[in-house]
Image 1: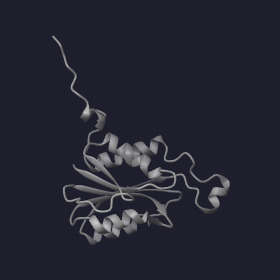
Image 2 (image 1 turned 90 degrees about the vertical axis):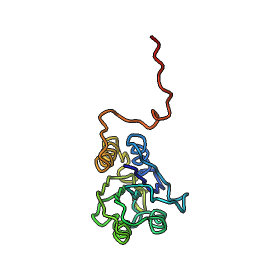
Image 3 (image 1 turned 45 degrees about the vertical axis):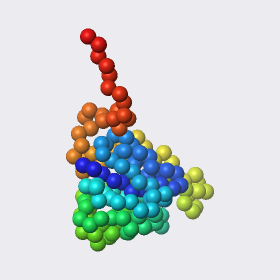
Length: 169
């Protein structure tokens, strides 16, 4: 299933850790950094994800603007976010854009992220070692599940570019 993930990862690269692992291990995933790509035709993708850290209870503004400007109608969508704390309301700004474009949300994934916002900086931040390896693996499994990808053979995109092994008889 051709999958696009539009993401923004700013302060500690929490979200980037997740989406880079997803791109490496799940076939047919293409990442778009919403901070550097402004317009993109997403019509060739079957599934579109929005991924971001949470800022004042919302996804990064570049992800929201990208979705506003580029999301085609009637595509399946999903949301991934990292945050210092948890709330069911996080990601609702992206969810509303998906809904307004007739795009059903097929899943939502969240995990803790290192957070040094405001007073947390004075005490060294929250969730310093997050996302951890288990959370990164859970994110990969989440996207593999919604794309119906079998990871049992540990697909790596780097293998796509490798020359085939020559066998001499």
